[in-house]
Amino acid sequence: MIGASSSGALTVACDTLDDEQIAAASDLIANAGGELYRRFGLPHPRLLEMLAEQLRSEEPSEIKDSVALLDDDGTIAAVVSAYPASEQEDRQVAGLFHIVSALDDAEPILTAVGHPANTLPSIPADSFYLARIAVAPKYIGTGLGSQALAVFENKGRTFPSLSLHVADDNRRAQAFYRKHGFTAGTSLAGGYLCMSRPTHGRATGAVDKTTP
Amino acid sequence: MTEAEIYDQLTGVMRRLFKDESLVARPEMTARDVKGWDSLKHIRFVLECEKAFKIKFKTAEIAAFKNVGDLQRLIIAKLAAKV
Image (cartoon, rainbow over all chains, first blue to last red; front, side, top):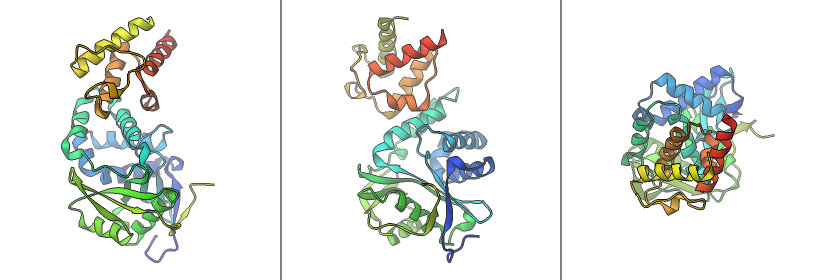
């Protein structure tokens, strides 16, 4: 069990997870995707299938190269998806294409994505971007969120800054990121704020097994 | 299918999608040259090309082509692979 006093959760690249773990990671990501995924109108099992394919795939998407934080028994406790901001458009387009190209009718999803509510404030072009951070409900409040954020900070440590989007009405998440040095930009789009901070030092808190 | 026939078909797809009868597909043409060619239109364009040429693109391919000439070469390769 991972707790606040834990010395660090084990992290592994999602493309090395077994089928059961991939399914659990996909479920966490689907839940973290919230309103956007609901607007897609895909049956939940189909959405999970597609997210699982993206987690395993070499092809670009927002969740390619995701990292999972594991409990002692191998349970997926959190998933972190992050990448260079310069890759954002290509990853979003490719990930969305992967989903819609498998459907008979792509229009409902393309319409949902094009809805003004899904327009996000721009992020610093040279930053490292946190696309998803998903913590399993039973680990919320245990300090695992900080460990997941440390994974993101470590992956982005060679970039000038770190960036992310957070819902304008999600005060709890905003407070969490502020505690970790992030500040909010002034622009608001689609009900989201961009938060960012300069990169400094090497983050700690998780045992990273994703790089040699 | 010849190169010219592929460009003709691409022109037709573009005109329908972007609602502009003056568009003519050219090798050096990019999204910046066409009004309204944003990320979502890009996906629609690729899906329309799949239907028009009866081929399927891989996810990585649609981010890889940088202009219409790249797309035309990709289409030729896929059509050749079907034969």
